Image 1: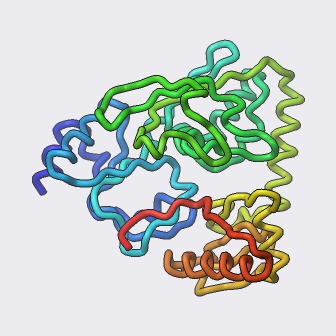
Image 2: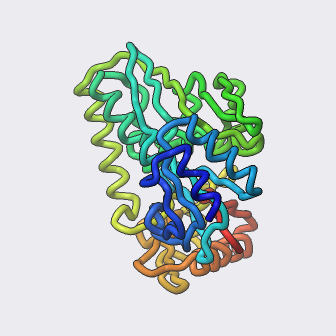
Length: 301
């Protein structure tokens, strides 16, 4: 393809794959092939990739660690850019951490611990990248990214690099301005506080143990499938509806936590969508509560 030759002029050939199976790049282990899959090393390469894609009128989608995605069985037409592989530098300066968008939250948490910085333990067990966490204001155990982010650097639709303060990011429950303005997160700066190494380590260990006890970490999933409805907990509603363990194909409502839909081994995207819709229908019929998905569904329909 002519576009492949063009792409090879702006980044190394080994970072460009054709017809790449996306199930290999998501925590759900589900998804068909992407026409072109790229792992860029820096923001300049992202700009160049998008510029070339525009010349050929080919769509581009950015993903981080693929931990909150459900990708279509038919795959994704166009170019997928995944930042988690190569854009993951983390720099600690005093009580601030500046990290590239592909940096894993677990890696940032480990750096925070190494430098005895407190305030990031809530995020250290979330299996995602910083860029995705900023996009959806990821949170757990009483903490959210809005509590620690002070600014983020983004690439605009016009391919300009822009800095946004935490206020400009408009971080709310599972919300930011990033998706609606079609920005691409390049990096973010986190403000923490000096703390006691042993205390921070203990907190991280305790939260990790809570996750192991309450979440089905031994199965592939995209984490919490549904957002928290106002005044309720999605997992409890699903459990109270008697849906724990319910299966469609190899997709199952976790027996351990009703808020998780898991892949028991060979689940398809169609299986998961059917199960999501069944849960939504059943919960609404029993309790009158609408469940909105937290997992992002992408790809050809």
